[in-house]
Image (tube, rainbow, N blue to C red; front, top):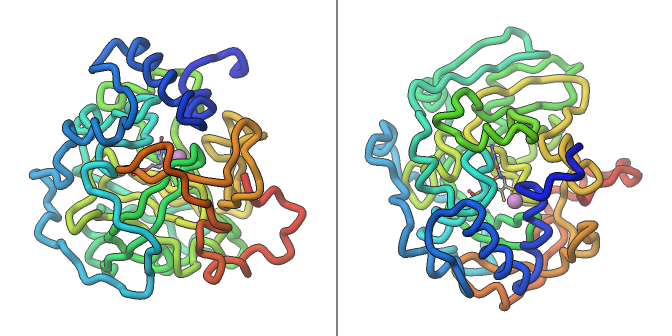
Length: 328
Ligand SMILES: Nc1nc2c(c(=O)[nH]1)N[C@H]1C(S)=C(S)[C@@H](COP(=O)(O)O)O[C@H]1N2
Ligand SMILES: [Mo]
């Protein structure tokens, strides 16, 4: 049934080459009958319509900026804030990139997070109470979308390991599954696209979740993370394709079964559980050898790196798993 649908989830195919991006943008503009037709260097033009990155109503605004952890270094400039906060993937608000305005409808308080499944004792915790139990820091991370665009941003947040420690998983738990809020079609019009397997879910092995790089994000550019980037709590796993970095998380479920993720449920031959970045393993429909940087031109390509440049941190997570499809 999904195979026949020529919308939403097929768009990444067209995003792969500059020519197709251009064509496809015109299609999108027509399809959604909204906004100007965006040509050429789309991200730069879009900058003019960028949303403010720090919602004035965010009760955590006073907590930022937090101290930068100097351990995580970039090999490229930080992406301009206006680009990272106005060119987004967040399908709950629409299957295109210009969702930042629509995302302002998301209600981010109260925000209750459920810790459940194979843990010593299941519990729920409000986001603001969770913040009192963790230590925030800033990290500069690269981000590589499976569609071949990339950015480099200063995230604020805390190591996911801290959340796993609070959760106290049983030793039999092997994975942690995460879920995005999907409560209101009014707030999230993308939920009306019934052919997607809502809610958006993702998962990691416990070993991945406790790797030092796995980071739970609460801020960006020294401010609370805005809704379009996944407020109030989203994941950043920079060695994996961007779709693993699930936004607006409401639950962490510990389990001994590998969770089926949103993109896997949609197109398992194209988007798998592991989704580690590898320039030598192409997507079935496009090359992963290079990427373009938000804020720049789609014609200026830079080489993609194995594990998005984070091999030293994560390579040992995958020994013994060589027969798994680790790179999609
Ligand atoms: N809930 C949810 N999380 C999501 C997505 C989404 O559509 N819904 N898109 C993913 C993809 S494909 C990418 S590349 C990143 C984009 O994050 P950004 O908009 O902050 O750059 O979010 C990921 N997390
Ligand atoms: Mo992505």
